[in-house]
Amino acid sequence: MRKHITSLLLVSGLALSAVTATFAQKQASLYDNLGGKKAITAVVDEFVSRVAADNRINAFFKQTASDPKRLASFKSKLVDQICEASGGPCKYKGKDMKAAHMGMGVSGADFNALVEDLVGALDKFKVKEADKNTLLGVLGPMKSAIVEK
Figure (cartoon, rainbow, N blue to C red):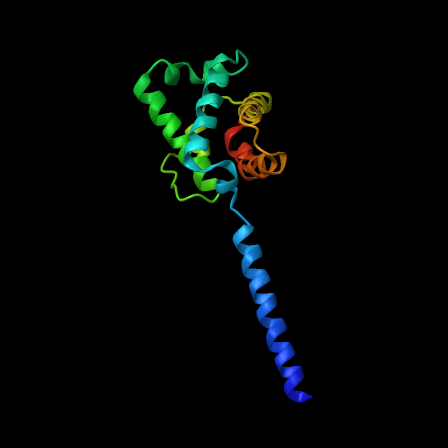
C-alpha cells in the first residue's frame, strides 16, 4: 500500500511538472505577442506617421521629421525602447525620458495625443486589447518624466 501511494505521488508530481512546463512555454512574452522586432518596427513606422500628421503635437517633432538621418535614429531608438519594455532582446540606448524632453513644454494633453496616436497604430495592426493595455501600462509611467506642465 505504501509503495502504491509513493508511486501515485511520484506520477502525480511528474504530471504536475509536465503541465507547469507546458503552461510556462505557452506564456509568451509581450514582445512575442506583439510579433517581435519586425512587427514593433511596423507599429513604430505607423505611429511616427500618425504623429507627423497630428496637428496637436507634430510641432514637437518638426526638426526630427525634416532630417532623414535624425528621423531614422529616432525610429530606431523608439523600436528599441518598445522592444526592451516588452521583454524583447533589444537595449534602449537613448537619453532618459526626462533629459530627452526637458524644456519642450510637453503638457498632459500633448502626452495624451501621443498615446492616442500610438493606440491608433496598435489598432491598425490589430494588437489584442490585453497586449495593448499591457504595453500602455509599461510605457505609461514615462508620463511623469515627459510632461512638464
